[in-house]
Image 1 (cartoon, rainbow, N blue to C red):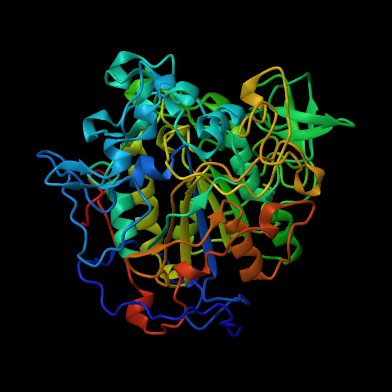
Image 2 (image 1 turned 60 degrees about the horizontal axis):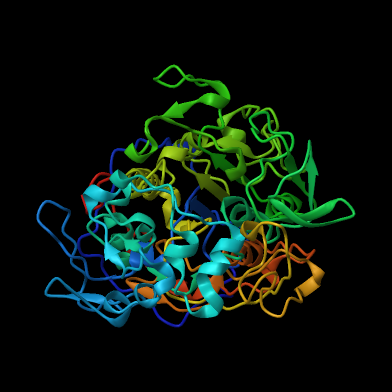
Length: 551
């Protein structure tokens, strides 16, 4: 079908790709691949969108000094192109010395309320990749923002239980730590060769489950609790409320919490089904038929994790499972797909819910769905406390390399973004697009941005309480032959901007029911859809999973 180039940008992709590599020898079967002249009915040349949804990172935690890395001996060397644009970060390094007020005279270091953990942001080196998990509860994150002063992070979200070994002597001040291009090397290289947004936010404050619900539906309401009570759902009226915590999905055989949650309304999977667009959610650990090398199986499959975890961690985390929260898209018993050829279709026998390895099986078969949501096994999802940036890098690079090695790559876009900030310091106050006024007995689940029980003016759009947002700023990258090269986008975006791109590209319409997709800023400024040259459409960057450097 004819491609409708409705969202073309104004500049062309830079010609050539010095230093880029071509992947060979992947052995994809020619008979299973779509012909080069076959096209889907999409508004842009993007026929395959892969959304890699990782865990618990703020923008400054990974990109605070981008594009300048310290480059100490023994760590992967990163040197940015001379024409690299600046970002809204913490500052930079000059002759290996921090330069910039936020690095040397930070409000968190000057606020005595943070004592004895008042501290300036500091660099975490590659040997310090394993760290403790920080506090990222709905209300505590708002308290750390301190009405926009952004000066109470150690006090409000620094981890009080972090061991000395993995807080590196910083105590609750660890929350001010950041990595640079010597540790998150692959992500910095992707930013160099493709596009990054430095003005992207979590849709609301809080932990993982609100983030994944917003990615799937743009909404954390209406939620119905089964099996008891949970502090993870607030503002309950007539039996339904708003998710602000991490309750497991109702009906999932692997759910571990007593009180579980089911969401009403529609999600993006429902809209894609209505348009007969192939799609899938690929969750690490979802396949219960596998026995891991350590002998673990079913819901208890586990893998070696970050040293800060003290041992293996379970591969599958139910409250990270995008579409298990809706009756329409749940695969409660984790039923396996009936064939690789049917992955992504409504004839798969698995209701579009798969293990992450099914994505690679389908990719090798030449059957990448139109829209794919990917989540690594827990040990590789980047979540501090059981994963870390180096384990995460291995997953990201192996995934991106495999996609780039497919002939489907030339019509593909990969989006990398995160579910929440983990509480890690970021200096940028978010725009508050939705107010709320939830006041519970616990500050962790109350609105606290403008005082006890108040976020903004307390009057939410559509009357849905418990949706204070936007929340903390997070990384967002687009990797594609059509992504602008070495480009930093400043468009205001959030997690639901991915929904908006899907809806606009495949013509699904909006979700409705108060979904934030109606407010979402577009991703289109990160693309250039004007280039038709084959060389540009094959643009690849293959990295080493260990170092993050070009192979």
